[in-house]
Length: 299
Image 1: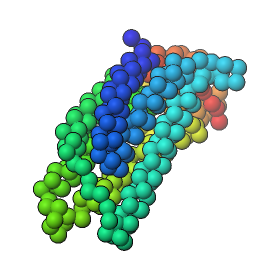
Image 2: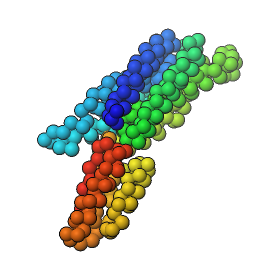
Image 3: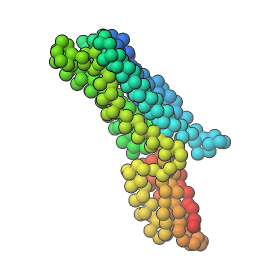
Image 4: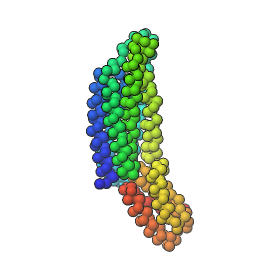
């Protein structure tokens, strides 16, 4: 089974599970009207829609065209950028919306208490399902040496979704222990804002870091992945002991490009040596990362 096949199977499983999460999230949000649960539902909805796109991208990203002779790998990090940016926008929107309703409550003293009845069992179930998806994508990506940008993104997004459910469930449990007529009874009217704000503070770092990493791939920046850099660097150093060199490793989606700079004058003997070693480097790296190219450059 190729790395692409493993990625596709993981994405299909993720799509099915996200469908379950979306249906459950919509039901509980319509039942309670809690904005934090709308945020939880919409995360699942985004995940569901985007995984359909991810499956299509996974199928076509290796396709070569005249305009993109090395393939359409840029679609994979581009997918991650758009998904993460949508999530950041949603997080900010949710805080603003709940802040407005909370301000109105403190201003007028009028509001509708939260309906918490179905929330606790829902959040427990969602945390378990989201954790299952995130762990599965992490394991499948590890099987292919963590080379899949899309599986990395899916694992992080489902981790965020599960963490949100856990925080909402914990906050609901505490609120159920609170007397609505007591000194903290106002939380039944404003708790949505505080929980949503906590969710945003805790989770917003993940999509922002994903945007930065995906932009680096799209822009052609060198890889910052320690496992990829460490493995490939060791392979290059093992075979090119007879030539003074440096190297750069670029990753775009599941495509890896090695740029090896030879820092000494080229002659026929060195040329034959480099050709021979290039084949050995290529085969050893390809045994772990299927989509690679190697280029020599001379100074």
